[in-house]
Image (cartoon, rainbow, N blue to C red):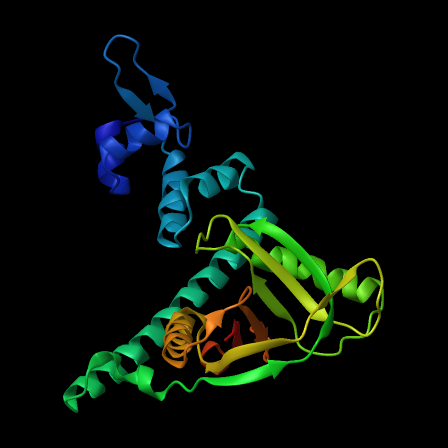
Length: 266
């Protein structure tokens, strides 16, 4: 057996971390001396600590790693978890790539002697009348992270009932403020059929703008619309909503097209 010091040297994991892994039952020593409290590890456990290190490099949480180890390193579970982590990392890389592009654009703006936020001047806002829509809807108080789950549920109903879509999907934001952990959101799809699962979204006069790009940049468009509403002397008259002209599952983030609407009145 190896002392915790020798095990630490070989695995290049600090004794403090090894003691913590023992406390959370992630990796327990083979033997602990009752008198001294010294921990000793079997040589075979080096493979386990190396697996833990590898999965940590893949940005696995300790809870995820624990599930893999407790499953006796079930290969199917490990493969499925690594595939999931690969998707998460790919998404982060894509987000960082978009962020880097934006930094380059901002530097170019500054080099030209313009204000950093001058891009807001290029956002066009106009007044439009949105016609009445019959919508299949799902309204929930939800964490924004649950959006994919609920939009999947809505489209499941759409497919199961063989309803006829008449327009792209939309989201109506009913909450008075922004709380990503608990927001009153209504997901909807305009359909031809009218029944107990549908409601009428009435005709509304709206200040609107079209956003092309990453969803993370949409707050700029929201800000410009609100400024336009104030400058033109209108008042907000209902919950804002977004209509999605592209599918984010099949569209590159910088190619997303979203129409943003704020109902207004004089």
